[in-house]
Image 1 (cartoon, rainbow, N blue to C red):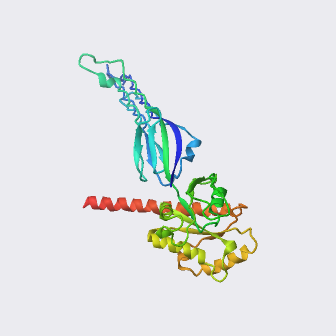
Image 2: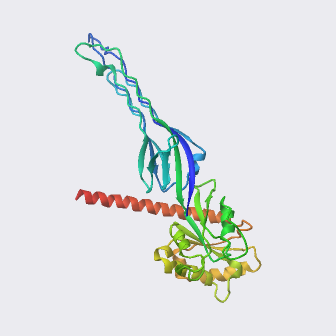
Length: 359
């Protein structure tokens, strides 16, 4: 359940600062001699993975990056300041290659990986460095070395952040169309979706995320029934789930039948999968009587033990695009909370590693 998100950017590291030609001119000091300082080193361009980024969407707005150059050296042997590093954040799963040669430079897998893609130019030496017994007053200094410039091709082999699950005909493909740029096939017959469809959801106010329309699950899916185990594997790779339920066909005598059926299949396949955060979404509220059936469902759901872990239940009409913005907002907030939790776990792991190393 991967798709390729691509971007091409141009990076250039900072130039090194030039060395200084200077001579000491203090009062009462005759022939003070050379005192030109060295130039500063240019800033490196560093790629760093972070879970805060989920797509390469932000490179649509900025494609050229240049690190600051080093400052020139000064008299009195003052070394120029080094240029600051330029850190470019990318999501895990990004493959970085040279766009001109096609050579793969780095395959990023985990969060917080770093790679210096362009090293800053070395600062030039001041004339003080060239003083010798035979040349006591050199009147030259080195220029700074230029920085490195190259064009990078970024390819993100992206796993979906959010998986949309539910029984066949719950409206998963319609919802995917409503929230993203994906165009999965839509139809009123079982198993319309034969392969997972991926789409990028953009809001204009938050980091985009990737949603996957998972083919409909039925009873016995964990044993290969219907479209089989392979789609449960796709679901296992997502970070959270949108559990979509057709509110128009809820049974008043057993309102949680569809909800419990899907969760049972998730649990039988993998307890880890069953524990993924879920947002329960009641769809097709545009159909007559669906609103009343939704109220019955909500009342029963509040008593369900799984709902205590995931206390979010929304109502939408995917075909009428009602309630879509609220769903996007709740999804982004949950993804952000998962990111914060992941970052805390990473920091906790580093602290434990340092304590063990200290021992």
